[in-house]
Image (tube, rainbow, N blue to C red; front, side, top):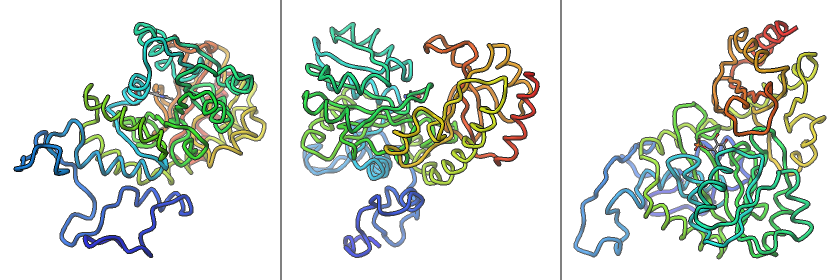
Length: 395
Ligand SMILES: Cc1ncc(COP(=O)(O)O)c(C=O)c1O
């Protein structure tokens, strides 16, 4: 137990990966025990803080909440422990991604982004980065490994991966791409949203930066927008961290304290939620694969899935996101109408199951009947019964 006098080295090793996910999540961000202080931290809402005699910033005291504040520090310590890096939190997942990219690139730089990842990251590249003279190249998740192996990343400044990719759930080899980006002198950024910090540790596989939309499974209750950037604990990682922190301070896009506090509270149950969500996804993948009205079922945890071999090697555990193709938009509408628990909603990772017909948004190259299922934490038997009933209406 840590006390105000300092850590006890026998009881206070850092929360390393040798501990179980449940333990690490329940204790991530713990502060030293001080008698009389709250068992769990409460949010601190202050914008300005009392100033002392010393010039602001020289005595380590908080002066103003935008660059940093006590509530963000607790959340960031917690997520940094899980990622194995140094974390900075942001108002949304896209705020985190755009900050990581914009803080690190200059006009004329070549940036490689996934062509089949979350569509807003592509829009960021094509509509914003190119406006500032950055050369953007889009590469499919399944091809980036070959591009790296051919040496074609030479000259890139930044490479971003999204694995598993959203929504088609393809997987690429982070360690192999990390070796290539390192040789090319490029920064490797991995969007770890779908996997979560307990499902995959890109920094341990050689990435320089992890970005994530904590709006999804990390917080998992569909009631908060949040994102983070974690940088490797290397000399280069520390330089990148300083750049991203300066960017956040100047552009002013940290989360509010309430969101950071709520996120820290919510992530304590991620181990339990992910276990049920993955169990539900496994059952649904079987159900969908066996149904004549469904094709193209994808879940990287299913042995028949094209991503399975690499996902099993690279990922630590699976989650509740899967995808499949129905006949058309009308078939998806029928499914949603006939289902009690799979509501139409465009997010994933929450405690409630949902389904999203991605073609309706126009950003992904998918069939009209392509759907992303997000399994919640409902009982598996109930979800299977519900979806069986709804699928049988499709004929
Ligand atoms: C993989 C991925 N990255 C980033 C984002 C953006 O997150 P936010 O909506 O919090 O900005 C999303 C949102 O769906 C996502 O799926």
